[in-house]
Length: 197
Image (cartoon, rainbow, N blue to C red; front, side, top):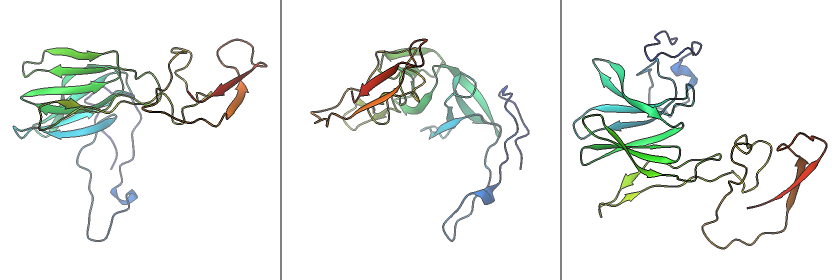
């Protein structure tokens, strides 16, 4: 099967969809349920029985929430800062997590940023919120890097040169530093020394 519908306005090339490419345990089968999506990251079944899909927006720069209606996914809210990392429902409102923000989408479609400025400028971002039995909202916060060492693979550095990881507790460092050519200035022959944190 090939992606053949572009109802979401995507201009990305066709993507091969072949369920045989997925390895499954014995007794299970797989089939294509939806196509034409760009970068789906989260599925939510609301208390009202609707199926919502969160699209991260990394492919087109527009994080969005889609709803399955009449056998097709329709955008019900968009304009979220990529990557949109997850959606959840609580007391009738939709909570959308996206880079640096948590936004409420009310049933009438209005949006309100309830958290702004989360440190999500690096490799990882604030995640989908969940609600506890105590009625409080909980979420995981991303980190700047995979290793606590900023390197040339961290493409966000020129835009956010002072962003770094914040350890959650005391960490004993071993004094290991890393040398690489500098990439924050126009002198590629110079080297930069970087340590963790």
